[in-house]
Image 1 (cartoon, rainbow, N blue to C red):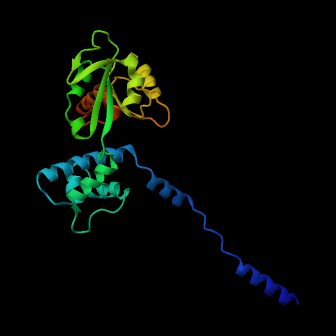
Image 2: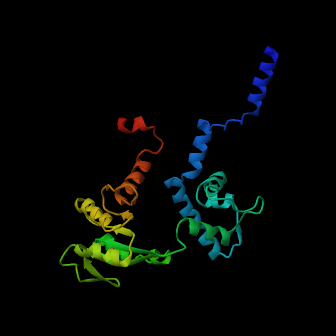
Length: 249
């Protein structure tokens, strides 16, 4: 009898549906990593895109990860890893089709469509950016230029009449503008950005020499030329020295 009960109990256990396997920490980390693309990866994709543009101009039909890496001071493995986030490209031993990869990265970066852009601040930097032809070539169309200086409002900058920033909300909504370029003094930057976000701007290229705060869901890229040249200064000053040796001179 006892043997019968034991046999029945064993049979019930074997009929039970197997439990779903839990993801361990490594699995979860891998899943998370394949769904998140870092800013550094996106910046490298932009470099690959320009490399492919040059290859198209040179009438090349194929290109290898080795060549893309070499032209961007990266390893071939890094190039392949960056591309693998978005799918499989190319064939082993044959490389990538320049046309196909260029088209794919263009779509990844959102360059297959046009974006309406506004620019705020027509000082030296802002004026130079208005005349920067590559914006339009890449599909970023400056639709309107703003400033709050009464002496600049109404003046022509390039093909644009400078509009009063007080009208920004109405104009941004009417023109369906989602990207703003900010080139205003540091003290004015945060207030300007707050108003832009309130008007519906969801991506900001910031040339103001200060960091800005934005709510979740708004993308920001800071372009501070002073920081970049300071990095070059450090590279020259620290050459051949360990970090702790710099202050000992």
